[in-house]
Every structure is written in C-alpha cells, then in structure tokens.
Image 1 (tube, rainbow, N blue to C red):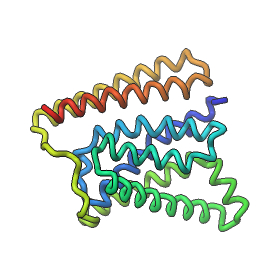
Image 2: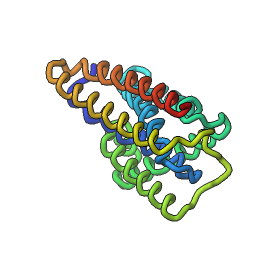
Image 3: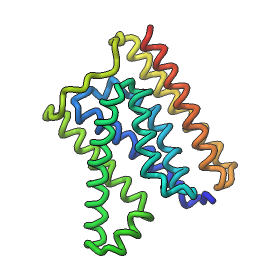
Length: 219
C-alpha cells in the first residue's frame, strides 16, 4: 500500500530521471536544449514506472524493466537508432551504478549489512546525490566539450526560432497547469490514491507532449 510518507520517494524520481537522459546526451556531445521535450516526456514515463516497481511485489524486476524502458524512450521518443540507444543507455546506467554504489559504501563505511539495507531503503538521499553528480558531470562535459562524437542526433530537421519559442511556452504552460491542478486535487485524495493518480497524470502529460512535439517538428 502506498503511504503518504512515500510521496517524497516518488517525487525524487522526477528529479533523477531527467539527469539520466541529460547524461546520456552529454556523453556524446549532443545539445541538450534540443531535447527538452523528449526529456520531459521520457521522465513522465519512467518516473511512475520506477515508483510502481519500487513499491510493488515486482521489485526484483526493477533492474530489468527500468533499463528496458529507458532504452525504449531513447529509441521512440528521442528517435535514436537502436544500437546508438543501447550504447547510450549502457554508459548512463554503468556510470550511475558506480556512483550509487560508491555513495552507499562511503555512507555505511564499507559495512556490508548496512550497505544492503541502505541500498533498499534510502531512495531519497541516493536520488539527490545521483542527480547532483549527474548534473555536475553534464556541466563538466558541456563546458569542456568532452565526449564521443560517433552518435548523431535523431532529428532530421532544425526547427525555426518561432517554433522553438512556441514549444517552450507550450511546455512551460502545460507543466505549470498540470502540477498546479494536481496540488489542489491531492488535498482531497487519500494517500493511497497518490501513486495511481500522479502516475496516470504523468503518462497523459507524456503522451500529449510527445505528439505535440512530433507535430511541431514536422511543420
């Protein structure tokens, strides 16, 4: 059962997953600002997916389903080739696994039993730390222009300046309206309804943004 105390654990997914995609792009010197909408769309898909797995009896599948959904997002939403998406997803996950394990080992001072416990329970601090490290890594790679260059962006057309501005305004308005509505609506909800409602809202927002983005890209 989903309790109100677990809401911060759920919301931290919306902070972590964007940095995963930003890292995957930065590792290959791909301009992140060209993929703002795909990042938001993919986050709205992965965040509820990860939260549902985390608080369900399918927790043992999280190491399989999460990378698979991440890979599918790179292929379908970002429009990268399968082999390129596989490389990007693998590098991003390997890096974050190393970061997470290093953080947990340092926190528990290399105690194995405490390491197992914190790996399963301390989602919030792990998420915040991984988001910070990912963001810092993206900043360093962007400023120093490090990274691989053999993966080309999936976009085939450059959008005009007017379309870019329109897309940003639409994205900002959509996010503001949807989260403002949720905040007011959740006041009247039981804690058990939080996961289901926010997950459904995230997926709906992802679908709307994805198809609006594809339509504008083809104009």
